Length: 426
Image (cartoon, rainbow, N blue to C red; front, top):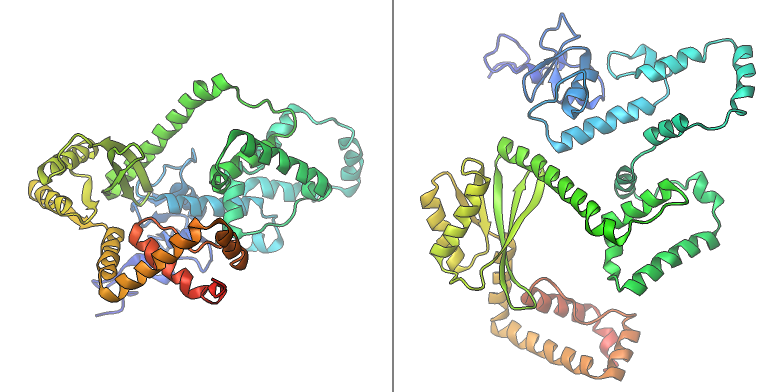
């Protein structure tokens, strides 16, 4: 094989030629290159093969989308869009230095920052005299709107909090006393207690976004009424969900998708099948079908899956994932014969659960699991003994619940092995 950096070589790929990219850490060069070394103002997108003028800065806008000066790349992904947008925002907030001016070929320099740097070169006396009057001008509505434009959205704040871990304390937080913070937290806690809201709701990302949004608004916010929650806001949430589906459908058409099913039973004894669609955009819940009145044989399941595939598009769905039950395996075979381009794959999690079920049937494991079940039943039926056990184990329960019964059995045995010395008091 010849040298791939030689343009005369049949295996030459210009995208992999280091001479066709700037020596820069700019992430835009991961997706573009100079098609013509004599005109470095033009950069070609390696995803859609489109030539973009005005350098790598315009290429990043092309990949991020949402900029009026350049069309969005039709083959970009959500991850690439996020990467480009974050870098563009970071550079926009970066102050211009002499190093930036000397390296404009590699990284973008926003016009606003450049104009700010130029304005700072004016006469110091003129700036000082004007500065005295600035502090005497009251804040206007336009100033507030600019502030809201610069400020990050609650979603962005929460996203950065999870990505970067604990953040530096802001000036506003430093001025608040612990007593004020505790009072706010107590009001939130009372809302949970009075309305019977499960505590795990506090682990929701939307809960953090809600609190951040209220904090950014400031005092005087009137909460939405009962009517607003059940009618206009619900309709708005539905429209946003429809927009989310449109974004997912775009990825389905571009990359193909996988139709996944999840069979379960609710507290009323109904047999339900959840349908979800997975693609590079993520996993999207499609619908839930009640099959309680149906005979769940291979033909019925194959017809049900085929109906969902037709709703999405036969040329879009490339794979179906189900559990490993005999009826679902037979249905998968029928589907593959009806749609030759389709692949059927058993769910890996269900396969692992079946493996645990078979292992639990072995004599050595069966007797151990039975003894462990007898111990937990005895302890949990005796109130005083249960209280003493939790005191010894620092509040940790013996039974560690999992998604399936067999996984619960083995995880509980693991708890026995770890806390065996603490259970000697029994």
